[in-house]
Image 1 (cartoon, one colour):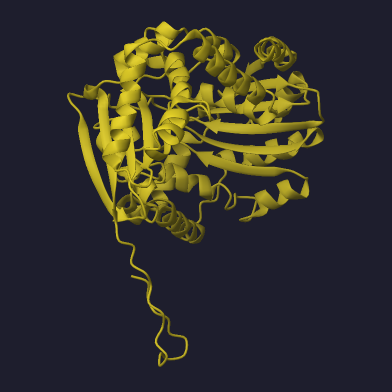
Image 2: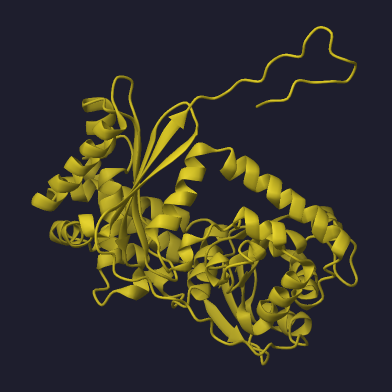
Length: 458
């Protein structure tokens, strides 16, 4: 009965999500592409501007420049003082933020339906008229450096992940951290940001996505008013070094102050645009959910609750990327077990899925969970717009967002086994181990310390 109910829901949910799923497309004369997805269930909207620029476009010496520039986008334009952008959005009852990834940088505002003009006026202003003042740059650069220290240098697992990528990828720009290498941040100059901004923050390198209670023609007309006058930039397609074929397993050990060991394993895998067999990336995503898709997944059932060899274990894969990436595994040993025990247990799970297809019942359960999760995500205005913007910035057709769920649902047991055998092989593997070092504690100040003095943490 429960299985029939899930199947019925999966049939109905796509209809509900797709009732207003039509996407309207228009391109301005200056090259700005606009995608509009109406949804009239509530008087709200999300407006997002996506730029085809991120850390994978950067080169040695200026890594982190895309992320620093994202920070500077809130620090004033030729007509707005620092902080005014956020103040205006808040005064209009909205929320806003931004994020930088390997392949894109995006900015968004969530607003009431009658406040779209506020978003367009602000975003068009900072698209070509950012102030980029030395004083604000120096302050924000220190903010980013501190962010790096807290989130990477002082976080042993993040530090391991950063070093892992630098070893796993030999030529691909995915070897560089989004936040940038510390030495590059130390030498970053305002002129670097100005050059980066001028070249990439142009209408012909951006995608404007609006989802919500809007009419497409009205959105296009408003976009023409605010974005239409902006000049395009002569943008040359970036040259990206291809990743050479890996010829053998690679291993590294990272020593850092930490409480526990940590294992990271990654196999070279394709993304949607990198394989002749279009089903392979979707089979890899289903595989990641079979191994690590909730309490009933193999890792949770066997490694954590069953053998109790791991305190935590995970698997992940990203279908949509600009360049080939990695199928990742991670784990932390349970009490009484070593990092070698966790690695062998994960390798045994890989061998198991390679040697025999998953059962139809297990695949159906996982597929139901994955598809239902994706369908529910499509019920979010923000997620709908995000999928459109992400696909376009990656150079993929936004219509993949409409076929994504169907592609996942079509994966077979034989396909899951095939991708596991093809890609999860030692020649494609990089392994990183965090070797925990003692965490030295700060000593309390002595009784006769002078006023205002504090003991320094080592």
